[in-house]
Length: 197
Image 1 (tube, rainbow, N blue to C red):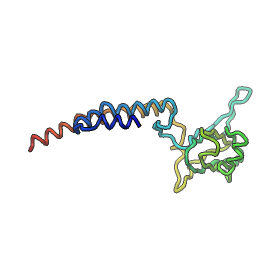
Image 2 (image 1 turned 90 degrees about the vertical axis):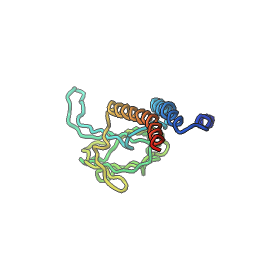
Image 3 (image 1 turned 135 degrees about the horizontal axis):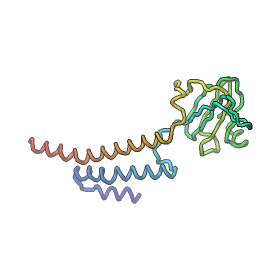
Image 4 (image 1 turned 30 degrees about the vertical axis):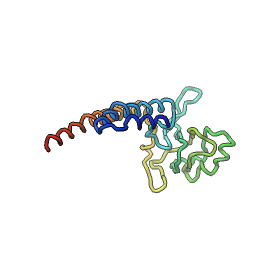
């Protein structure tokens, strides 16, 4: 609450020009800093572009002899967010492996099921506040069914952390550029309006 009163006192009885400068030079960078720090420490203020499920296709198994064997499968990371989906998996697989322990898996028996060549999931799981890993043997389909439509599996694949960090750097640069242009553009537009009249 003290932060809000500090902001009110900071902006009280200031001109539009001064508010624009304070926003561009203090508030916007401060907000970006808070979001960045909260993302590093895993707090919920962090901005994220992740899907509720991250998919990685498995193609080979390494035997004890060291020889690779072709074996299809799917690894899923299920985030603890409100979501419902059906992922098509071919090859007749009826088993799944998960990172849930037995009591938790039993408590969520109706939220994570295999039926007719697909995995049905409804998250978040009861008693779980972190991501859950699931491995299924079989061929990954091309689409994921979600309430109200169908989405492509390629849109749900595991993204590179490098590409996400590059995207966030570009986003931060855009935020700072917008703040700077707002602070310098508004006073110039007002001056032009005053000289015209």
